[in-house]
Length: 84
Image (tube, rainbow, N blue to C red; front, side, top):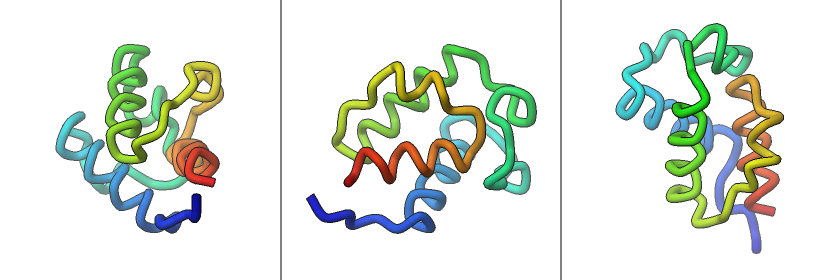
C-alpha cells in the first residue's frame, strides 16, 4: 500500500483529534510534547487515541506498538509505519 499521508497530514489529523476529542489546547501540541507528562494523558486516553487512529488509518494498531509511544512525534512515526 502506498502511503497517501505525509507526516504533516498525520500531524494535522492527530492535532484535530487531540483538540476535538481530548480538549487539549492546540498550542500544547508540538512534536516533542509528551502525551503523559505534557498533555496529561492516562492509559484510557491512550487507548481512546489508538482507536481513533485506527479509524483514521483503517489499520489495526498493535497494543505493543502503542506501549512504546510517549510523544506526538512517536505517534506520527507509528502511524507512518502502519501505513507502509
